[in-house]
Image (cartoon, rainbow, N blue to C red):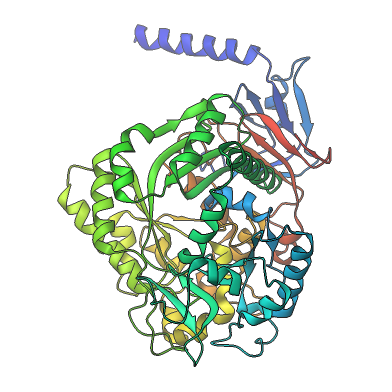
Amino acid sequence: MVRAFLLAVCAALAAAALSAQPAALVLRNGKIATVNPAQPAAQALAVRGDRIAAIGSDRDIARWIGPNTRVIDLHGMLAIPGFIEGHGHFTGVGEFRMGLDLREARTWNEIVDQVARAVAQARPGEWIIGRGWHQSKWTAAPTPNVEGFPLHASLDKVSPNNPVLLTHASGHATFVNARALELAGITARTPNPSGGEILKDEQGNPTGLLRERAAGLASRALAESQSRRTPAQRAEVLDRAIKLAIDESLSKGITTFEDAGSPFTTVDTLKRMADAHELRMRIWMMLRLPNEQLAPKLDQYRIIGAGDNFFTVRAIKRQIDGALGSRGAWLLEPYTDKPDSSGLNTEDPADIRRTAELAIAHGYQLCVHAIGDRANREVLNIYDDTFKAHPDKKDLRWRVEHAQHLSLADIPRFGQLGVIAAMQGIHCTSDAPYVLERLGARRAEEGAYVWQKLMKSGAIVGNGTDAPVEDVSPIACFYASVSRKLKDGTRFYPDQRMSRAEALKSYTWNNAYAAFEEKLKGSLEPGKLADITVLSKDIMTIPEDEILSADVVYTIVGGKVNFDRTAGVRK
């Protein structure tokens, strides 16, 4: 009894001493959605160091304000846990801003015109790079075309000497011109590589469209050209891509970015930046390299919380199939609009099984890209077999990246196996216009973007954008998650919509859990990292159609305001 009393007195004295020290930052007069069931809402919070010190009413937090405390009056604006991008390509976001942005093109001719303008400013022989086109978004198919894709002759007219490489919005196909085909060594006699397809016309000539692993033929030609850069030039390009990616992410309210696969060179650069406290947002990264390169270095590259929790590497990425838009997703039955194809298996399942053994032996999560129902079944089988072979390993939190199109029989397995569905709400509304064409109504209704069915299975469903496949904006993705509303006003199987609370949790706590970081972030509560996003409008209560008009006002990482829209500058 006496011991308990003394402990209580000590705790009270410690709390009093703690509260006597002013906070570095206070947010007050706001609406705070904490994603903490024990205290779901508040008006104000205090930050000391990089942690949340207290949260409560304005009156509660007033005592934390000292002469040097920065006080931000939210004027009723909404503060939430910092958005966590659950699956994107971090350096790809920066690289996208360094090339042609093709996302808004509504005809193939618009893209040709963009290439022509780039050629006029390029050096002789310089590669013209772009990304973001999607044939389903064009108002009309190009003429002539094969399977709705243009022929490279149209690009050749405006760029006869500069190689052109234009990546599909999904990242699972590229379109190239004749000069790029020549440099890649692709002719009418070139066979399809395993897991890829060189699209050809009726005469057997390459059209310029390279699906899945066939795109690697052109990418290698580009890489060979880039290999002539000096180490200093390569480092400069990477540093620029990182800076652009950080600027873009912070401006969209993202405090942590979960990167879906990078090589050792990128890890080395980010680790150096983290140790030097040069990162302005947190990065959680998957390694993406062949098994023979991974195996000897896995222990060396397992990094947890470097630079005061700014950089972590604890997962491995593999890819078992392609994307639905390019008809590369691996299906159990043929495509409705292409009955001679069931998609593409892009990486050998036996090789992925070897990766699974490496991951479980070295304490890594395994994250496998799987979009089609056959691909998801194969991945779940690999996970199930690996878990059974290692019954002593618990709470592994292995992930399926995308999990977009599932067989009814496989949906319950996510919850049963404890496999995380790392999904992207924005893909649902972006892909919906062609999903019915690809899958037919039955398969689409049963298993396409089935967030509610997965959650009811007990699975954790994460959220993100797969940027630069989509814009990295969490607000656009949040809107897609709660509305499933298309541009024509229709809703894509609205029974699978998330509630606003579910959508916010999917972008915060769920993503933190999917990275073993839920004790550090994902909700606003004392002791957790002070990663906070402030929005101009309350996306939890405003009319649905107003959600997209909300702006990110502040992005706070570890108690530091690293994006401030009111100042008009990135800090």
